Image 1 (tube, rainbow over the protein chains, first blue to last red):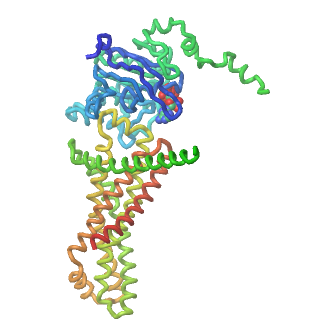
Image 2 (cartoon, rainbow over the protein chains, first blue to last red; image 1 turned 180 degrees about the vertical axis):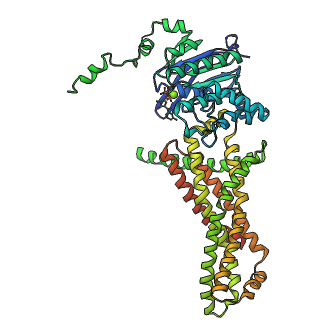
Image 3 (tube, rainbow over the protein chains, first blue to last red; image 1 turned 90 degrees about the vertical axis):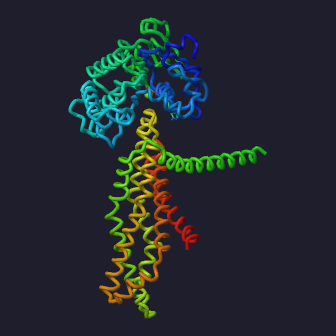
Length: 267
Length: 259
Ligand SMILES: Nc1ncnc2c1ncn2[C@@H]1O[C@H](COP(=O)(O)OP(=O)(O)OP(=O)(O)O)[C@@H](O)[C@H]1O
Ligand SMILES: [Mg+2]
């Protein structure tokens, strides 16, 4: 049993550190993602969001720190324990990671075929319904290489959602989609989350649109969670870096307009 | 002083690195074999790999077998004629094929055809995070990807080798007997008299071991490919080179103990 404030958390991260060669990518991350809610991690490109997500789904091992998933300490678990934790996961990789030797149908059916005892007819129904929801109706026989990046992304989202995982991890579900599609993907994530009471951890660059479906927002900067709270709390926070990030500027960036920067002679 | 201790440190690091890699390499095979006997069983995956490694190499292996047998018939006839012992042609052709050339050449051809493709496929799967995707779905990627391939290699190689031998002997007969006029009766009688079950088993043992080694090396190189295009191409090259070297080295080793 974890302490009281952890009971309602799907994922708790404590003082997570990880370095690659000479780069301290995660530098003491603390985060608690509440159950049955959507937690969105935002931050500048290269700040370590994907690396953090890959620690949460236990693909990478931290140098130090703890990850507690659904009340069990994943950093202390053995291989079987880790597999049992992973059965709860649905994951969308930043680049999709669809199996390119399989059709879209087989990709989306994969978690059901491998991990459930559903009949073929049930699987077929679930997959086709899922594909319709992500707007890929009639595409089930295509192969990943025959689809656009946005279509691959939606197919990968369908694969992450199809087995109704308890914990859903999404790395940039809307990057590469047009605004209308982004909106419908957001709606789909929200609807699925509410219908099946999922805990969602999402990395997104789609600010501020993504705030509409987020319950909690974590702003990641330089390997730490610099700001965490509800959307209202975070957007109202008097945090210079985050306000600049929202305004579309990297922290510490030259504040002159771009035209002026380019026009300035290098001498 | 510092340079000496630095040198020792670097030497130590290199040794540790080498031992670690060797350990990973060996553990990779052990876990592939371990997971092959552990449920859940996936006969569908095994059959698919037997098709790719075995069935789709049939034509190529048969063709190489035919030419090898033909050239053995040609060379063997012309050499044996100098000693007036054309009657031994069948024995020579059959023994050389069954004991040596069958297993070795089939293994080299399958390495070039299926082994390289396997390293490239697994390398690309690694590079595009497909292997990670399996892991996150709580599906053991070694059990799902590597075990069926290694098993399929162990099953397919002896069959392909047998095919190579039979077609090779026919090719030797066609050239030596039909074309050049070596005596027909002694060709087959010689084989029947001089080739023992031990000879045949030696060839099949070799094929079995080569199947294991080739799939092990090719899957390992692909599985641990660096995540970039050059990583995949390097994995493919290294897989083919290392497999070929190991085939020939193991061949000598096994010949010397099985002879
Ligand atoms: N396997 C690795 N080896 C070495 N360095 C790595 C590795 N993976 C990530 N990094 C480094 O970690 C840092 C964070 O990478 P990460 O992919 O988490 O960024 P990100 O926040 O997801 O960015 P983006 O928004 O562009 O996807 C980068 O500087 C990257 O160079
Ligand atoms: Mg990322």
